[in-house]
Length: 185
Image (cartoon, rainbow, N blue to C red; front, side, top):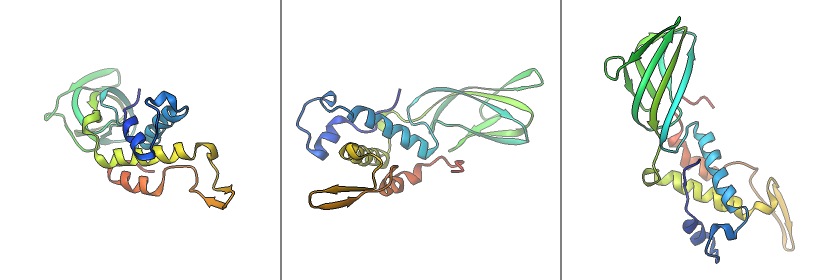
């Protein structure tokens, strides 16, 4: 399941679609969903507000636990398992929530850290820049769906140069402030 970053009504208003439902436009719904996946990939984070469980195999010493769904709304449990022994951690005593995930107050190594938490955005609190980026990318991909991947399209009046397949430059600019802080790509 994905979060709806852009409504059909918004798409319809921008490109002047006449039919009443998204199902009247084959390809539009998958394009809209795939734009969400592309944005999440670019941001290195999941956007849908839900409960997630992530498990991390920690080899070398660290106290940083990078979670994928941000912002974090709440943490249900943090369990460290080391040599078969498990220990439940508590907020403020053992870890604090950060913009990138969790900061353990003591380092761990050679362990498995399991975190159950609620994170991400609800439809009503997605930043406007992310919504705008999704709208621009969805409209662009829908309008160019017949020439997907082409960098040059010949028409009766000449040829048109299009950007390479991927997120538009303006879309990336809008999304950059929301990239996961610990993303290396």
